Image (cartoon, rainbow, N blue to C red; front, top):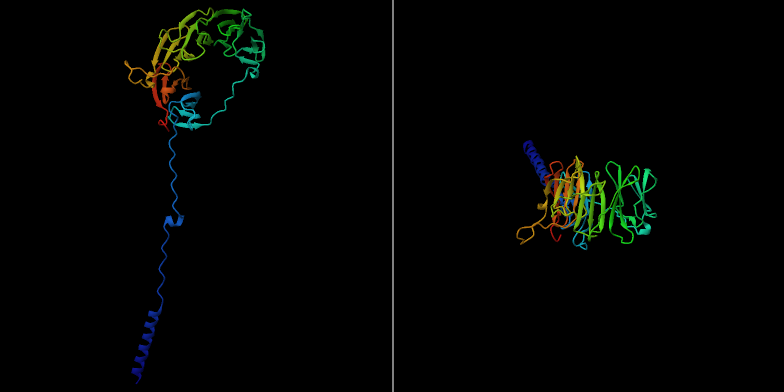
Length: 362
């Protein structure tokens, strides 16, 4: 009877084992990891890429100046009421053509006559507004020798009063007739003695505003009708004030309003025409025009003109000399956005650059 009992016990044990296996709970499934979107919450909109910086189209340059190897300028657009077009300032890098925003500098309001400083100091001279006289200075602050203009009817001009030659030997004074308030005179003095060297009335016809300054040892006279765009300018001998040559030579298209030039060595100066249509290199000791560079291609053609003509502004723009010695011309108005870099010695355009300009209406 042992065998049946053993078999029965074995079957019972097997049944218990099978029951235990069927009764054991199945393990819970592994949780699904959250997606990156679920982990970070609701989707975040991507920030829009800012539009590239650009200057307003048709801008007029304000306060332009060299800034290292770049040009700093502010813009006064044709529509000053347009948002973002008024009093914006930039720096244009001449090496990379990158345009960067710059803070708008504070510009002092023009002083009233009673608020103007009582004296203006130059190289070796001082203008005393109260005395209406120019004094020679033996040292800074030591200005005692009054220059005799040769007539009590003459008074020094309030602005652009005087200038000193490159050698420091001569001083010129711009003066006007007290009663007329115009009729510009130029008087040249020996700085060492204070004696008059030359004296001449330079204004004529309607050209009654302006004055003279030195370019090296030569006198540059620049007159206008008290406004743009026309002007008259010429080089004069310092000891007689006799005309040496017309500025720009005999080229009638060379606009001499507000004449501006930079020395490039060996008695040569580079002068820009008003509006930057061209640049001439002129020997200021002889008056001879050595070279001329046409910059009219910086400006657009006038539609329907026959023969074709360029739309040159009457004045404006920036012209200066870089630390490298190269010259840079930055027109405004119709030519704004174009930049020409010139080799000073060869006086030719070596690079043409483009300032990023916003599309019209933006």
